[in-house]
Image 1 (cartoon, helix red, strand yellow):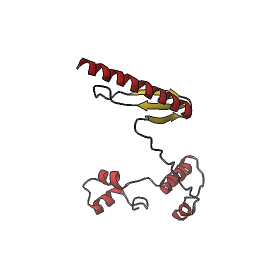
Image 2 (cartoon, helix red, strand yellow; image 1 turned 135 degrees about the vertical axis):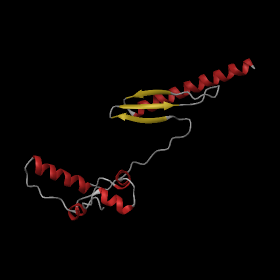
Image 3 (tube, rainbow, N blue to C red; image 1 turned 180 degrees about the vertical axis):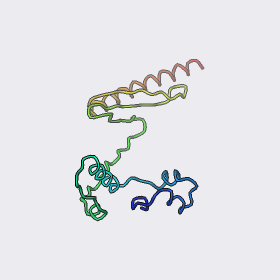
Image 4 (cartoon, one colour; image 1 turned 135 degrees about the horizontal axis):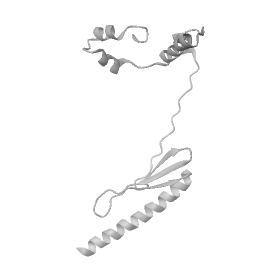
Length: 143
């Protein structure tokens, strides 16, 4: 808050007891919305030669805030792989089981929709499980 209200870093660093002002900047300096808005106004005034009023703390407090609603995380059952949305039109499915020798193996599938990716992932998982089972049978036969 001291930095936001204009105190220089060196003075604040000395008051807090930091040896270096870099420590103060790394730990305590965070760019706030108000600081960004004020910097934008300063740039407008200097470069654009505008007469834009400087935003105040009260204006920021009275600004309409959008309530953040996180998307609930869907936990997948063990052995069903993972799904990731890479971009608007691409999904990735990943499955990483252990093979017959205990080594982790990983394979991916890609699709344009979540549903298509789920289907491809399920088919790949079934195929990999059969391959691993066949490998285990071969190992048992050798012993």
